[in-house]
Amino acid sequence: MLLIPCPYCGMERPELEFRNGGEAHISRPLDPSAVSDADWAEYLYFRSNPKGVMAERWRHVSGCGRFFNVLRDTVSDKFLAVYRAGEPRPPIGAEGSSA
Amino acid sequence: MPDAAVALRSPLERLALPAGDRFALAETPPAARFVFRGGEAARAACSAAFGAELPARLGLGGERERRAALWLGPDEWLLIAEGADSASLGAEIEAALVSAPHSLVDVSHRQIGLLVSGPVAARALSAGCPLDLHLSAFPVGMATRTIFDKAEIALWRRGATAFHVEVWRSFAPYLVAALAEAARGAPEG
Ligand SMILES: [Zn+2]
Image (cartoon, rainbow over all chains, first blue to last red; front, top):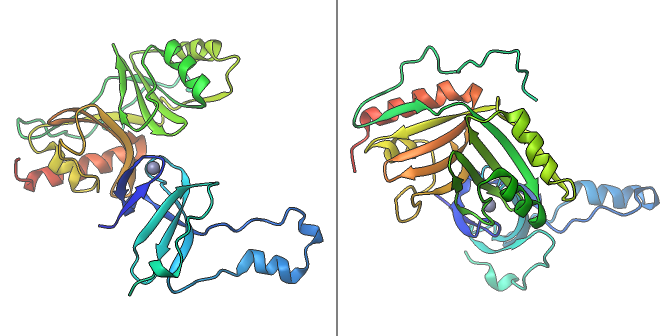
């Protein structure tokens, strides 16, 4: 089973306790009424869906219950880094991508 | 708040629970239960008022006399007070926390406790719980929220071969049946 390190529990836990929460670091426009339809649609519906390293939100729903962020390689399914909600994305880029 | 006029009924009352040397299931005594949430100041004040230390991080449950505080999340705990009246205990805790922002929710009637014991207890739990339950990974006293198949549970190790499982009432008959079935085929050790 895939083990995911939870930054709040401080240990690796089985993936069955987690839910994926979609792409990370997407912020809601502060004033939605000032945003064009195209930009609003961009915020609501469009995600990067990369082949390689992706920043994602995960929730340890059947554990500590908390949301946190990870860098996951979508090719290998490897978790390259985990970090707490609100922390900046760690500097891991294309070099983390592997086949 | 639970209605005192409603008689307490176990969701397991018509079920035959396994009771042997290899494997036994028993419902734990009635208890007042709360989910408590708050910051560090609230944690300290609640520990003092409740009588058992609310652990600051994942690990061993805090226990004193018949009260236990299990870490569920960074600002979330499950409080279990065996034999206590939830209304008066809740009022006592609230009184000690007037200056500390917090949330205290009475969940006494939401879930029950199940004592899972015997040499195949860990094996039976492992049929549905993906955690590593070896003593070196999950020592005596450790407590956490986790899952058993599709049922969310809180798991608290009471001894090398004994576990306290907190499960929501409506999932309890399912959990009992699944554990009993798993224990039938489980090798010891
Ligand atoms: Zn966690």
